[in-house]
Image 1 (cartoon, rainbow, N blue to C red):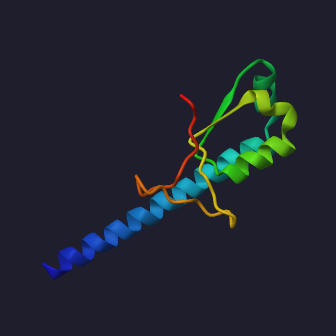
Image 2 (image 1 turned 120 degrees about the vertical axis):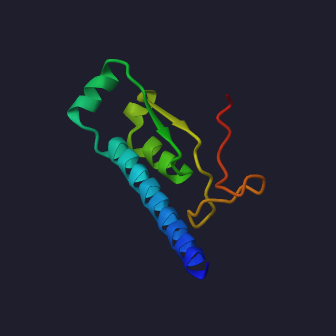
Length: 105
């Protein structure tokens, strides 16, 4: 029984690490799309396509607004994570997860 508990704890820790890595990779992929768009992406934006960016930090959105001003009409930000002065996500007391901005939907 002790081995089962240890294996369960190990699997849970491994899964949590995998999820955290996947979230970081997804965030980095989105930031790369914002700050280093491909010629194909720029062509789609000129044709009227909008890219939806999900779960970025408010500091990421602010940087996009400042550095990609001409492309803002082609961007939509949802579930933007609120950060503190140090840039760390703020906890949502109700959900226990990251606090997000209201998307007004």
